[in-house]
Length: 343
Image (cartoon, rainbow, N blue to C red):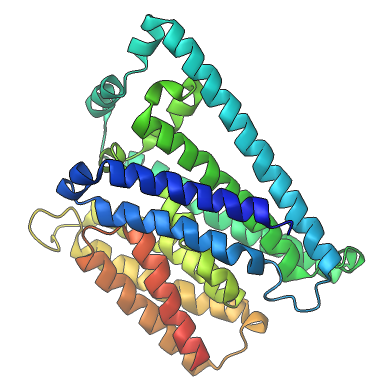
């Protein structure tokens, strides 16, 4: 039962996020945010349900003792993180309510006003935002590579672990650690802005204007990867790269070279759509070849998988409106690739 604290944290976030959405449902529906935020809440619930099975699914020989140990470490890490956040929010609440000047300074409407005045929607700013998303992929592939190296040297065997269990333990702990951190900050930002410490407010200087009154994109992006921890690693890795890399290429090419709009009143361009589609094909093909031992399928199936992922990416990029592509891209493309693999 060492997994229980982590699963309960996910359920807690589901409840808190759902309560926030229901409380503000009228304005959320008016601004076409309700469905997207409801999906984020459900992603927290889904991750909590799936969590107990994440470490051992690909490692049937993993002993219960080793499994309990890594569950315990992860739970301790998250409990400490949540404890630190609770103390931080309580402390800032106390000092804000005791000092009217601090409370007035920490007014979210003023923050939004200053944010909009300084907002710059140029290529440089967009590249900076996309680099932060690509860091997610760096973490995934770095820990996977580290797991392979330690497994080859026999070190993991001494701990009763293997590549999958060790790498996914690190990926999950770090990835969900960031999710918990940003979601608690987001809930404070959207409800009681004065509870946030000054250093946390600097995180939001690079978000998009469309995120001012909803959750930042990084949270659903990471949560949407959860189901694919049960797929072969090449699918999991490709999903992460497509969601961050293909989207980044499409956005950058569109801003730099785009001339033909996909549709009226849309910032997306045909040039960006094509660039993102080509990047998606290359990512799936290259990742499937490089990590072939972890997903030994024929070259024909790899090509079909690449085409399916490309088609889905382009359809989502062209037609998705009220649901974030940070949710749709990983879920639809990931399951599309997974289905082809299983056929």
